[in-house]
Image (tube, rainbow, N blue to C red; front, side):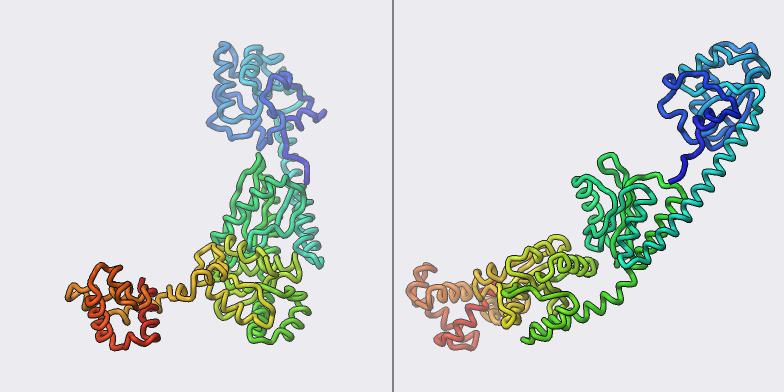
Length: 505
């Protein structure tokens, strides 16, 4: 980093100017001597504030104070303070010797810096000194920016380009920098932050990325301001870069912008390769599901490493389209961090995840990406197609953000799988004659056949349960049989009717 902007302190330390601070620093506002100065201006007007700018140093010879009362000195200094003047310089031996005591007292009361400018130092010398310092500081910042961008470009050419670029940016800015992937996971960082602060920043990054829109924002955690910028196109975000510390100047922002552009370009260039890998993964998943694991094992080992060791669970996930890229990126990271435990790829019913038995990856996937996930029982690779069918069955019972195990679905029985729109439509059609008859004639054929089947088609037991005579039950069953056009003495017809009653309910 370069020297700070010109300040009153830097002018006071220049021997050629011969300036003398009239008040001890302890009597001034904290940091008053180190506030940056935009310009130095001179005026002997009683009220120069309409013609002043913020962060300005004002010089005067004091002609406006001839015959002035003490209160006028106080009002003068108060107006300067409210206008944002950084300090007041009094040129002595021009109009009068020394600084008026009333002016000194007014500056002490408002804690404004007051300094003496000797006769031998023209006011223009202060203005020129400050202007030269501003120009030198600007030149130094531009030089730093060019040097920083050159260093960042060289870092980007290294084999570990992204990591090296993040480290170089942190070095140039002398702060912490973090790079996050599309799933909101921190992949690179340079510098150190407390764990709780890292967790808070990571949570905010995840929130921003889940929106799916390009964004630049600032956040404050633990008294530190962070600048966050997403990488990639809206709807296809590739990650985010976060920088600790705020208040970057134009050159600093330019350096950060160049890094964002380089990182975004590097990530976008990976898109084509990612698509090729996704197609290969999908083909390997298809090979595994069709009972040809040998080819899939060989190809996967060459590209990604060994497949998870059997027995494995198969999960099928339905991920929102806006989160699919981020979910795939997160799975890539899981596979890289724990080789041989996770493999994934597109399948006929959704994203297929093959993981080691007991893996928590499917549940975290559901939570992080609002995905619907079905998880199979553990199975050998030879039974992967059956495990996939189990995962699909469990998926149908899942809701957003939830992973459902096939064991939980199986425990509800086979007929529970009739809880689908298609099954309900078929059941309604099958039962329509009975329902229409009940509606038209006030009968209870649907309820009667339900209770009759629940009691193993026993007339007496059904009559007792319904509270009617057994001849009434027999007559209703016979009528239902006629309306449905089936023989309810046959088990297949009874099973079909019972399944319709279950699905319709």
